[in-house]
Length: 176
Image 1 (cartoon, helix red, strand yellow):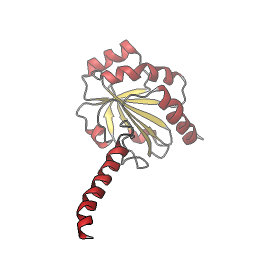
Image 2 (image 1 turned 90 degrees about the vertical axis):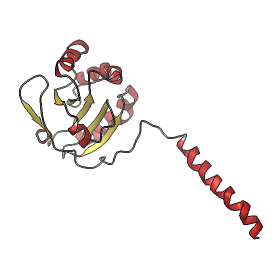
Image 3 (image 1 turned 180 degrees about the vertical axis):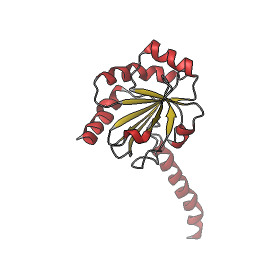
Image 4 (image 1 turned 120 degrees about the vertical axis):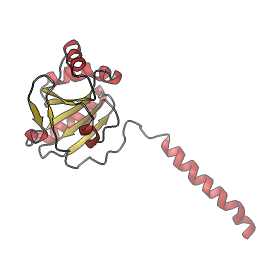
């Protein structure tokens, strides 16, 4: 009996490792679970990109909104931007931009060149608010409900499929 255990234990350990690694092959890397889902969004106040004013997240209490983290230096932001411009025309929900670790003039030029889907863009020059939101990199998009709770996080570019299958149905549910 002891002789069989000597071979059985490594075989069981190997089987468990194969099972874990095999499961990992079928996970979607863009769906990293966020510890902030269903938690209050970080409270912040930041300067506006296009004016001398400030914007506070407290101003959005009572409204469902999107916060899109973007930068002019971000290649993937260029990929999602036309979709955000088109989606903003639907007026389903206001989109606010969090311009992340960017040069102000470059950001303003970028929006003038490619279109501005945002009700307002705010400037996170040192990235502190991005860190509070758990931003891995840009772009990232958050759905925030009327109580200021984060309900969804899109890591990477927003796609037509993500809008149709996840974001828009959630927005309609939250606004209902």
